[in-house]
Structure formats: C-alpha cells, structure tokens
Image 1 (cartoon, rainbow, N blue to C red):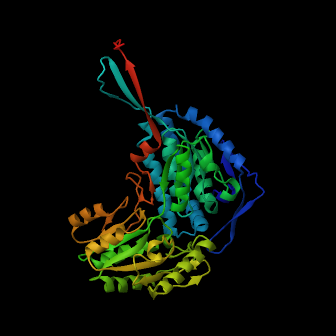
Image 2: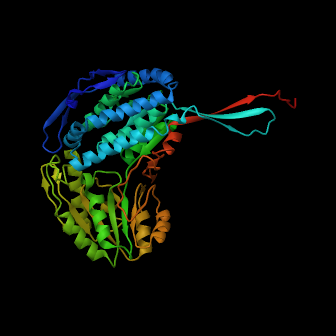
Length: 486
C-alpha cells in the first residue's frame, strides 16, 4: 500500500526534493484537525530552478513521438487506478470531501487522462492551404507552446490540476505545478507519483509544495512560462490577468461562479428539487459550478421551498470518511467564519431563514434563506458553503433577467417541460455552460469547459484545450522561382 503522506516534498527534475524554506506547513484533516503530514516549503529560488529545468526538458519532450506521449498518459492512469482505495482515502482526509466526492474526483481525473490520448497526436500535424502566389506551398504546423505554469485550488485539487497537466504533457509541453498547499498530497504529490511511475522524462513535470507568502508572484512573473493556467477566485484571476497582459503571456483562467438554477412556470418541481439538493450540497457547496441562486417562478415558489427544505434538513452530516455522509467539513476555519458572516449579513438584509443549520466542529449543516433579493450581497456573492438562496421570480422573463444579473458567468441551469424553449432560453443566459433539466455541476473532458464575464478566459476540454496549449506556425515553401515587381 502506497503511503502518500511520505511524499511530502516537492518533485523537481525527477527527484523528491526537501523545501529550503524555514517555514513548515502542517497539513491537517479539516474534519478533526488531525495532522496528516508536515511539509517544509519550497523557496522562490527552487521555483526558479524548476522553471529553468522545465525549459530544458521541454525542448527534448517537444520532439517525443505520439506513442511515447500516449504511453506516459496510459501508465499514469494505470497508477491511479491501481491505487484507487488509498487515493480515495487521502482525498477524504485532506480535502474533507465525502467518499462520494472522492470517487467522483478520481473518476473525473481518469477521464481527463483518457481523453488526452485522443489528441496527443495533434502536435506536428501539418496541413496545406492554398496560395495565390504561383509555386508557393503554404504549410500550417501545430507546435507545443513551451513551459506552462499551473496553479490549482483546494476544492477538487486532483481533477483541476490534471485538467491542465494532462493536456500540457500530451501536447509536448512541460509543466511547473503549484497545488494549494492545504491539499498538496491530492493536488500535487499523487500526480507526481503517477508520472514518476509512468516514466515521464525528468524535468517535464515539476511540482512545488509552497505558499504565496514564501514565493510571491514567481509562478506569474517568471519569464519562462508561456501560459499561466489557474483555477480559483476571480479576484486572484484579475491579478494574474494584469501580470500576464503586461508580459504578453497566455492565460487559461477558470474563476468564480454565481450559478443560477432557474425553475420556470412549466417545470416539474419534484425533478427540480432532486437536482437542486445535489447541485447545492455536493462537497458542502465548495465548487465553482455549485448552485448559488435558486430563481423560482412564483407559481412553484412555495412548493419548491417546502420540498427543498425538507430534503436539506435530512442530509447526513459529519465524518466524510463515513460512506453515508453527504455534508462534511469546510476546508478551514477561515472559510467557515466567512460562511457564518454571510449568514449574519443575510439576516440583517432581511432575508427569511427557513432552515437554520448549525456548526459542529468544522462542519456547517445546511442553511436555507428565502425572500432574498437578487441584488443582495448574499445573492451576489459566491458563498462556497452549504447556504442556499431562494429568490422568487414574477415571470419566466424576469427569472432569466435575474439569472444574468451577476458579474459571473460560469454555469447555469433551467428547469422546464418545453425543451425547445429551454434550449433557446439557455442561449440567452450569459454563461459558458447551461444545463436544461439538470443541476449546474457538470464536467466532461470533451466539452468546452469555461466561463464568461468574471468567470474566466479560455476553454478546457478536447479539442478546445489543444488550441489553448499549442501554437500554430505558417511555413511557406516557394517551389517555383518567384518573380518580383522590382
């Protein structure tokens, strides 16, 4: 059995390397605060070294064969599959995710790897396009981009890390990756072990266990990476965008969300409630795509509230390692206090608390507010907690207007019996993704995953990620002597 707690070091140039900082981070279980492992943080200089190593390694990896890249991807997936039980256990202990969440995360991670096999051959493909100049042959090449700087969050760290790492490696790039230190094993060490097992040449993937106070903006300002891939808050995304723009670096930014769940006048309420409970409370609401606002037509409002509250208050909560648990802990005390502050502010704003949850340790049980104004702070904030906001719409048209009245535009959903109308209304919601008669938390490796407005830039998923992580080059060959006018 693999003891992932022992891999509490950074992985640079194919070696497990002790951090050189004076600072030691204590990685704890968010459910009971028990110590999982201690990590000596890597320094800014170690990050710089990792980028230099990645730059050299990428030159050779860019020339690797399609089959070589595919074999690495296959073996990395093989490693994760063969250690499934241990990985699920670590996801549960380190992220506070339930057993269901842990299995979902591992499954999504494997899907990302398996899809990468389908586009590993996209680089070095050549296509010809016509030329107006006699004797000229125009060839269009697709080449690896270079070194990619990858930064992942605490909530689905393995999946959201692999979403960048797998396509980067499959397309001939190298990576310097920094997971959120709170989930360094799930977001970093396990992935490094998988690629070590897979025989990935040293230096192509480097993983840094460190934190912002230690390294500052080095992952952003270092001159070597050509693209910064980040999943996290919109505020940090704006900061990254400013730095990247100044340095003409590409970005792939998947940022915050304020996903509306719209229940129209012709919706099946029972079906909507079933989806609503899952779409709000999976992983305690700590997902960028989670339902943040339930916008319900007045004809269904009371019925929806009654049935939703009944379901929410019966959800099992507690230790996430118990397979029956639905509501586990929030990731840390800071997030918990932030959630409690949103609850207090909502009360002051005049929202009606129809289900009052409670705090037990780091677990927050479901809270449900009704009579919420769409303009209120509660409705306009990405709460990242098991706090449900239910808003009444006077008409279907108003419901769609409310759905769009947010700075975010990641995911959304519409419940209706008229699927054709639902599809047309979906196109009028300004978000990267809209799901009809489903909840907002959906992902797949072969769809264009990403947001509009304040929810980000770029798209993951095949084939869109291929464009993000490669460059195209025009090579013309003048096969017949060209005549010039002077």
